[in-house]
Amino acid sequence: MSTHRPRAVVVGAGIAGLGAALRLHQAGWDALVVERAPARRSGGYAVAFAGPGYDAAERMGVLPELVERHITPDRMDYKRPDGRTRFSVPGSTVRALAGERALNILRGDIEDVLFTALSERTSGEAPNTVEIRFGTTVVGVEQDADGVDVTLEEGTVERADLLVGADGLHSATRRLVFGPEDDLRLDLNHMAGVFFLDELPDGVEPGVTASLTDTGRTLAIVSVGPDRAVAFFGYRTERPMDELAEGPQVALPRAYADMAWVAPAVLDQLSRAESVYFDTVSQMVMDSWSNGRVVLLGDAAWCVTLFAGYGSSLAVAGADALGAALERHPDDLPTALREWEAEIRPEAERKQKLGRQVKGLYAPADPFRLWLRDLPLRFAAYRPVSALLQRRLQLTS
Image 1 (tube, rainbow, N blue to C red):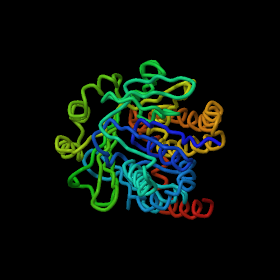
Image 2 (cartoon, helix red, strand yellow):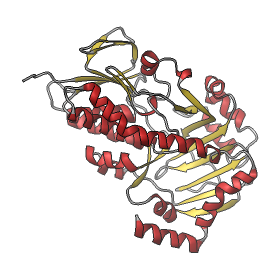
Image 3 (cartoon, one colour):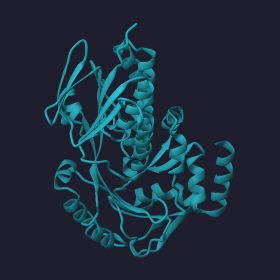
Image 4 (cartoon, one colour):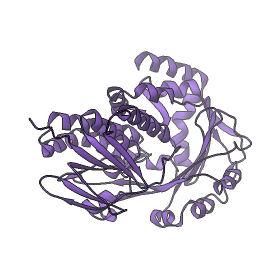
């Protein structure tokens, strides 16, 4: 009987990468996680975490820790340019609409929970079966029938049975193995920017999520727990890659220069933000997510976008399904990867389609589309409707 313990190199220490490393470890694999950033990142925007990812987190044993990080606003205020409130949705209605098996959580908090779970499960082992190496990434990939050689930036070559590219929308792994990003990326002609605020702007109450949308752009101040808030920017553009190249310090002030409400005060904090997430809103459209001993996971493979939501959920679900497929076929990697993709692809493609359909809701192009977007929320804001929704959803969730 073979005593070989399979080994994976995982590129990317985000949700998909850490989830893959944890699930592969649970499946009996060793793993090396490499991350380009010099250290772990924190924060990011709040995401809806439900559906297959919620179920996967439960199976992987990390759901209780995720539940502890759950955040919901006391209220959601939709603002006018002069700061007056157009309408509000109570927090109880927001929670009822989400349902019981659903979380609202920061991307960084999901990463933190997965990282902690990895640390706890590998501490005390000699040697540890999971290593996380920061400040490096993949620059070369060569594979044969028996394994894959992964060359890292510092010149070392790591031999593995499987390479998992979980390095996001602009994946280096995907570029090296599957071809140029421009051939696979579908831009939805929007940009998104997020950073933590060091102080709450005047006119926004603690614990309340408030937003202003005018033609083609949205600014939201999102409550992410006691004494914490992030600024979220989302806007339309016909030149997303040019905007990305210019960076947030140039692009955001230009796009929001004439927005009223708290926009000037929030932009004043941009220059002193510790880190800023700023990227195109794009999807990856690929015929296959694997090539030999290389597999893509999460945004590197599909990227459903924030328009569809559940990208973090799909990343965890994909990691769990990958580990399960490898457990079912420990000696047949091609079959394991085919089964894994057949399981995940239908849901990923449904979410991608949804993202393309609803992209206009985040930054409506004209006042009429804004009115249409807000109509269901306006109904939910009325007290009788809010009470009915809460009772109905709590009974049927």
